[in-house]
Length: 429
Ligand SMILES: *[C@@H]1O[C@H](CO)[C@@H](O)[C@H](O)[C@H]1NC(C)=O
Ligand SMILES: *[C@@H]1O[C@H](CO)[C@@H](O)[C@H](O)[C@H]1NC(C)=O
Ligand SMILES: *[C@@H]1O[C@H](CO)[C@@H](O)[C@H](O)[C@H]1NC(C)=O
View (spheres, rainbow, N blue to C red):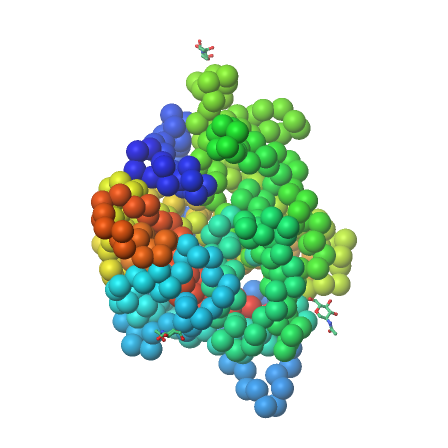
């Protein structure tokens, strides 16, 4: 708990907690759980019967041909002299803390890599193609700060082809929790909904000394689900908030807690985070399916970005806590157990809901994983580190500065998440 704790407290992030007694018990079980992964990969490679149809291309604008379905999840980073797709100093939708270019991160090598999947190619992002696909559509990013990170990357990518107009921002705008843009050229909408658990929650508050999030696993967060009807493409990204202290409820009864408060008996009540994470994901996917049936005509793609692990080395406030300046090679690092299990949870829940939707012949609803866990794991160089603040070493001391080794610089590896997202939208259906 020492190395990331303080950063986490301030930034609502991933504490790499020691496994609780209960999580330790399941380690053996989880080894068996890896076997079905191979099967899942097989499923992921099967062509999907349907999804969002691509609007007919205008003759003046040739569209890339959809590629055969591909497993983008394993591969390697290879040097790419072409460099980034946008300039961080001129994209105005980046949260300051991830604007490494504007904060004068001195090394630039991290900008010159591309992801090469093991068995196919991942084309370079084409903003015109993406905008074309989302013409007259609404793409919503729902989740925690990782969802926002990916949404802001997409905004920078798309803004190179067409200027976005900010049409909505919530009153508490300093937090930037809810925003919506329209690309007038295509009547395409992109929005961000803050919802770190997807289900209802009362967030912890350092100010009032409440250390635990209270999470209601059987009720979805109305703030986004009430807008579901307007969403054609939904991307969920979440996970890190389940690792921090929380109290979990079902039917208004406490069912357990993680890093339990003193008033709850830890031996009896510690619930870990895998189970409650799975429940939140399942409740979300099921509710989306249920409401989709009511709204039967609409084509809709639901994507979930898989968990990405932090790259803190040593203390969170040491200048070099993710100081690597190039990617790991395949095989150089092992995936953390927590990360692997968070990823499989999402893949399994997607597979489960696909079967259920198929079994009950739900039309027009499609589920996909943006499976970036592995490619993200290989990019310790892609985080802001100290460059979450401008000119962090300007005032002298190199010893104690806050580091962000969880989110991604923009431009940076997170742009690859959106290249995969784009390919999922392009899949032949
Ligand atoms: C990004 O834009 C700024 C401002 O226009 C410019 O000074 C800088 O050279 C650009 N950086 C790159 C890498 O193109
Ligand atoms: C613009 O897009 C929205 C969906 O985001 C759609 O409801 C609306 O009908 C579109 N407008 C036109 C003129 O097509
Ligand atoms: C917590 O529960 C365990 C197991 O039921 C019990 O042995 C222990 O005394 C309890 N601790 C407290 C502080 O109530």
